[in-house]
Image (cartoon, rainbow, N blue to C red):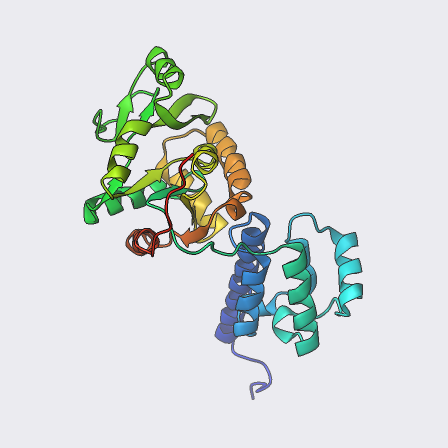
Amino acid sequence: MPDRQTPPEVDRVAASRRAVAARRERAALKRDVTMRVITPQELLRRALADPAAPAGAMRVTEFLTSIPAIGEGKRDRILAELGISPVKRLGGLGARQRRALERFLDDRFPEQEPRGGRSSLVVLAGPTAVGKGTVATYIKEHHPEILLSVSATTRAPRPGEVDGEHYYFVDDAEFDRMIAGGELLEYATVHNKFRYGTPRGPIMKALEQGRTVLLEIDLQGARQVRAAEPSATLVFLLPPSWDELVQRLVGRGTEGPEERARRLRTAKVELAAQNEFDYRVVNDNVASAAQEVVELAQAPARPLSRA
């Protein structure tokens, strides 16, 4: 007679697969916190919302060491100060422990609060391979009332790119002339190779006509725009997860292994700068991400500052 206490082999296999999948999801969530794709507070919110989910099943020790700058020694001191047992899981924290952990995170790693309102100048930036260009193109095609700025670049056109439509393709001498003449709102060297810049003239003309202008640029350029025009609205485009960002970069097939590795290192640095931005938008779907950016652009405006 079979032992009724022993689960069928198919049940054991299914349970093992679920356990492996849960471990992988917890590992992915930890990477997302480490790479700053999501904030520690966001992971904690997910854990408390569904204690049975992989986020809720994560031990508080794993959670803390996934936060940049927290090693095992600091983790243990934090747990002692907060009065939380190292065997606790995030979804199983008591009310007092939850409040203590939330206060600690808010004090040490405050989340950026939106400034509210917007200017007529909207900047879209984010890490490499996040899909900034795809989202910006979608907005251009579906919202012609918003002007998508065309950048100047010293790199050669890629197949299908049209001068004046996708970029203004110029040589180094012309780019130098534009800088010297004050014709660029911002400019930078990207990926240690080519220079990109935003011509000032078309933007100023559109703003004077009352139009909203969208700049799709890199982190360096966004910082320059913020310095030149403090009231500009800065939007940071995030990937759904770090693993998805890696997959998008690999899937493009346009870079070799060394270049991919270098761009991923750059992406990690870029993600760390997201608190410099006014808003965050997750690009898990191009149409919905584009709509979020458009809604920010259509929010009640604050006046552009003028020196």
